[in-house]
Length: 339
Image (cartoon, rainbow, N blue to C red; front, top):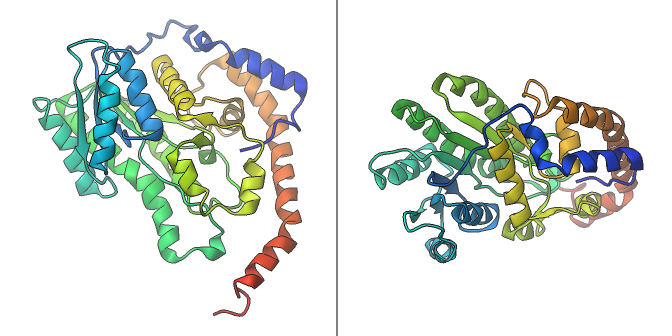
C-alpha cells in the first residue's frame, strides 16, 4: 500500500529487526492459543486466505468447517484438507451458503452447530469478502452499496450470529474478523471498499469490549495486498493511479497472510498485522485498542510519526500529477457532457 523509500533506513531496519521475533508478544506470560483438537469455523474457506488458513489449522490438528457459495470449490478444498490430516479424530465439513444477509449467515452458523450436536465452534474466522476498486464517479449507487455488503455485512452478519449463539451456550471461544491495511487508511480508488474495512475495525473494537462479558475473545486481521483469486478480480476494475500507488507494495501470498493471522491469534493480539507497513499504520491509528507490546509499539509509534505523513504527502503528489490523465479519461467517457 505504500513505498518504504521515504522512510529512514535506520528506522526501517530497527522495526524489521523487532518484527522478526514472533515471541516478543509473549513477554508477559500470555498463554499461547493451541488449535489442536479445536473445532474451527471458516467463512470463505474454499479459496484464498480462508483455504490457506484452513490448511494451516488442519496441519496443527484442528477440525474444520468451511463455508462458501460454490459447492465444487468446497469439495476441492475438503480433499486438500483430508491430505493434511494430523489425527484420525479430526473432522472436515463443508457447507454451501451465501452469507450476505442476516438470515443466511444465521442459517449457516446453525447448520454447523447442528452437525456437531448443537455445539458452537471453538473459533470463528470470518474470511469471506470481495473488493471492486474504481473511481467514485464511475460507480452506480448499486456499486457504492455493494462495497458495504461485500466488505462489511458479509462478515458482520456471521459475527452477529456467532456472538449471540456462543454467548447463549456459554462458549468461551474466539471470533476473528478480517479487515485490511485500508481499515487504517485509504486512497484513490477505494471509496466503496475502505469504509467497509474501517467499519469492521469499529465492530471488532466494540465487540472486544462487550464480549468480555461472556469470555469471548475478538481479533481482527489487517492484511496488505494478498495475491489470491480475489486480487485478480479486483484488478479488473482497479484504476491506473491506484495500481501505481500500490506498485511498491510487495504484498503477501495467501499462505503468508494466513501464517501471520494465525500467529497473531495464537499470541492473543486484538489488532493483528503481518507486515511492517500495516504495523506502522496500526501504530499511528490505534485509538482505544490495546497495545500488543509496549516496547515494540512505542518504537513503531515513533517511526509512524515520521513515516505516515511522508507517505501521505507522496500519495497526494501522485494523485495531483494524475489530474490531466484523469480528465482525459473522463472526457473519453463523456462525463462532462452527460447528465
